[in-house]
Amino acid sequence: MNVAKGLRGVLICWIVAGHLKGYTPWGSNLVTNFNTAAFFILTAFTTHSQARNKKINYGTWIIGKWFGIIPLSLLALLMCVPTMYTVSVTVYLKEGFPAHTISVGTQVYLWVMNFLGFSWIGSGGNFSFFHDPVSFSTGSNFGDLGVGLADVFNAQYFSSYLFTMLIGYAGFHFCLSYQIPRKVFQGFSGLVAAVLGVALIVVALWIYQEVNPSSLGMVTNFTGYNIYFFPLFLAGVCLAEVRCHLPCSVKAVLGHWMVVDIFILAFFLYSMVDPVGLVGNAQPLSIVVAVQPVLYCIMILALSCQSYHKKRSVITFTLLERGPFYSFLGKYSYTFYLFQIPLFSLNWMPAFICLGASECTAGLPNARTASISYQLLTVALALVLAVATQWWQDTYVAEAHVALMQFMKRDGSWWALLTHEQNPLSGLVLLCYPPPVASSGGLESDSEMVDEV
Image 1: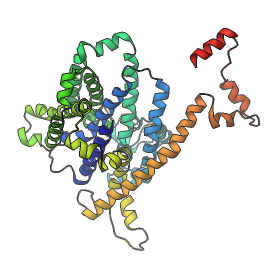
Image 2: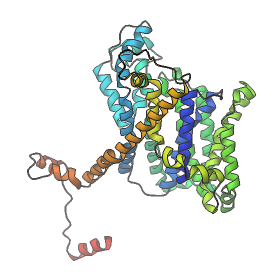
Image 3: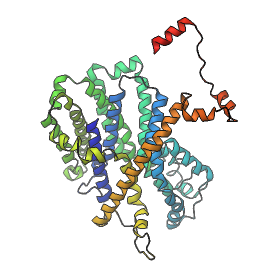
Image 4: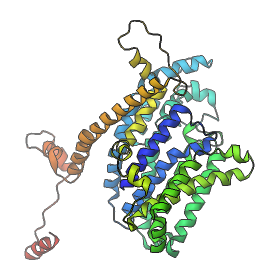
């Protein structure tokens, strides 16, 4: 898990560099877009490694994931609010449409879907953009968002995707709680999981290249280069299962420090390759591109097998288990991911630069062509926001999470406040949520309680 933390620190640097520089020198977005997919695969791998063959209270587990993901996402989304309520006018006037008035019902629907963690679905509105683009962009009926507003929500897709994936994993874990599905998935010493993982990678690459929103009647969040994350997440689950079935000799070989370094270097060097430049648009392109997720999966396996040796790889020892990637960037990778997006793409940076100036001509520079000093200032402010919001998360959101868990157990300050004898609504609360009835079974019950304690 320590290595995973450091690896997240490296991956967030890859993502931010791509947002700033347009992923140069890479020429194929099919390769460079994998940096976000790498986050999902790593999360799936660590999640299944921790939850495999264990009993889970799914309600409590999902609530915990919601508190860990969605409040920060909503906080980042607040930075997009000014754009949300101006884009419906500016974008459509520029495109020749009349001013777009979004219905109150649609606005409520959007905020509810964002609060629940399903904003990537809510941003599709009534899913009719490609069937009736004019109505979707100018109408005021329920679900007529307009492509401009939908794109604002699309910018914060990561949190919604991640939360949806984890809910899906909870359903998958529930299926594995039954003997037959578990035996099938874990059968043949992990061979079933390995074959399924390879198949999911193939499906993901097919979705990336073939699926477009026009075939689904939906907007950007349903394009192939976004929804291909879902099968890759499941591939990460399969990878964790395969790791549990590897023979000790294979784990020892994969975990050797030289092997680990080789696969780390192979993955990141290959990620700089332009497959279109190598093979053009010929059929081998899919095979060349498929090498990247395969290398990444082998790299994760190798990193996870280092426990079989006392020595760590050079890269792991120097970068992934200590230093800024581990202690700082890995810790704040999620909040850094969230808050660098509005700073790069919205008007917050020009407003900050012009703060206190009576006349300021600073426009909205392109993050890819702006000066180095401007880019460094943007990154620095994003890191400040990441640290501050993570502190807010660890302090207040975590406190609210604990309070809710105590309330669900009929305990804690919230429960005491709602059921206080001076609270006029305490009777209604106790009527809806009656406290558990104490057992009165005599000596036998007392002995059972002692045994349980």
